[in-house]
Structure formats: C-alpha cells, structure tokens
Length: 99
Image (spheres, rainbow, N blue to C red):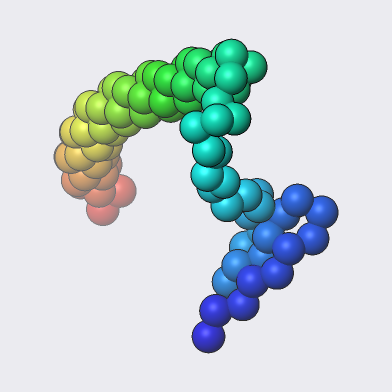
C-alpha cells in the first residue's frame, strides 16, 4: 500500500521525504510573450547545467571507483603475499621452539 502526503513543499511517499513537484500547466499560445520565452530559455539553460553537472559527477565517481578497485586488488595481493611470508616464518620459528 502506497502512502503519500504533502507538507511544507515536501511529500512523503513510502516513508521517504521527497521534494514536492508541481503538475505541468499548459500555457496557451496567446500568453506566450517575451517574458514567457525568457523564462523558458533560463529554465532550459538551468536544466542543461544540472544535467551536465550530474553527468560530470557520475563520471568522477566511476573513475574513483575504478581507481579504488585497482588499489583494492593490489592490496589483496599484498595481503596474500604477507600471509605466505608469515606462514613460512612461523614454520621456521616452530623448528627452534621444539628444541
């Protein structure tokens, strides 16, 4: 069951608080004056900036994830190497502990 309600510009849906979005309003052609088109251009530029910023952030996250995965692989190999070395040294030490 889905629940949602609106309070103070925010809506609650499935227990998550999200920004409330207005419904689109149709603007008749006779009201589309220069002020309207200026607002549309401004909004379109803002939307483009927002999409570009999101895309750039996603690319940075992907690059960072790739770097961290590579570093993680190297660290795992180093841990395996150190485990082997530890095992060898423990075997050598056990020979002298028996005496």
